[in-house]
Length: 187
Image (cartoon, rainbow, N blue to C red):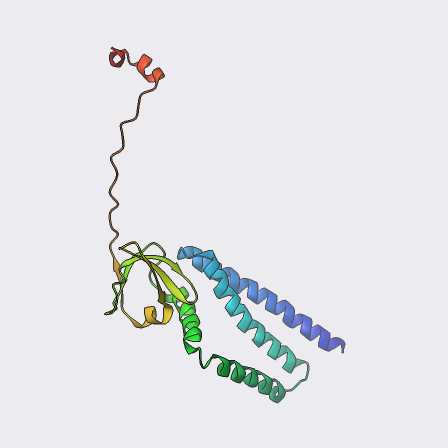
């Protein structure tokens, strides 16, 4: 009994250490790529959930539940999950694509991009990348949500930034201290 408790504690400590390390690496990666911290947290939570299931399965096998019992439970859980998501396959594929985009998408927030799509002009600024879609502020001023799976399957072009016209600013007024320092201006 004590060995089982020790094994479970060992797995819990290992899970916490590995999860913190992976979470730290994901957050460092997101800072280096100038990604949203909320998005990094979502990806970190998804990977932590997978890690937790693996740790739980390994702990169950280690304390003597048997490989066949654990594998039957895990495969049954995945079968039920798969059946539940069969009607919503696009949700699962968008989440998977969102994780892939997090690590592999060569564009960062604020970049002007164009997704080659015959149905709609998607030229604009990449505003946000979520687990399900990209938010692109179009050049027309509208914002479009574009599914992650389509962003992975269609070509994406990085566009040059549009120069922002500088408005004519009025000349700064001189203060009374500046006028007294320069008597030629006060005459």
